[in-house]
Amino acid sequence: MGLFDKLSEKFEKKECVFCGKELGLLGKKKLEDGVMCKDCVSLLSPWFTDRKNSTVAEIEEQLAYREQNLKELQSFQGTAEYGEDAEIFIVDEPNRRFIVLPRKNTDVAKYNPDIISFDDVTEMKLDMSYHSTEEKRRDPEGKMVSFMPPHFEHCFDFYLKIETRHPYAHTHRAHLNGRTLKVHTLGPKMQRSYSLNALDDLRRFLDYYPPRTNHDQYRAETEMEDCYYFADMGDAICRAILRG
Image: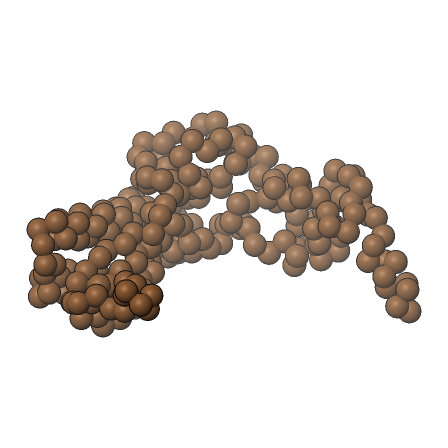
């Protein structure tokens, strides 16, 4: 096949194998043995990531499952809800199952979240992202210099890592806090921590190097409370599902 033939094939208009919509170059979503449109892709499971390696037959099976999932959502009774301004966990405790929404006020029928059984969860654990940077000020000459004592900003994000045996929703990292939580401290830089111990490490650090003023102390304590709130939320979700 020559270069011209390859280019012709690339720009050739095709049809979505599911709805028949004509697709241009930018509208084609590849499958292993066909193409589909973005509207049909939006019907797939929210956590599904293996479209390009799926066959037309496999996607047909998933779309049939998705229709059934939507029907089952009508009888889904949420008895407990966890979350604030990020991803929301709704748990149906009597039937030992749950759904995850990307945010509050999500149109459940339109989003069609996968209903996941407690028994299909193989792993669920709290996962925290942490880093710290020094905050500096500009001196009279316009140069960025350290405060005395140095100021540091510690940034935290809280996630739940979920692994399941669900046929389409295999893995997900659910974000619990909608915005990065920032704790501000004074004093020498805290040693970087890569585990959940970072929160306890920072608490001990604040005890050892307390902020200079009552206002700074109150601000740091309030910021720490926000961090522990989301860490406790992650633990509560794990207990509800893994021990349910």
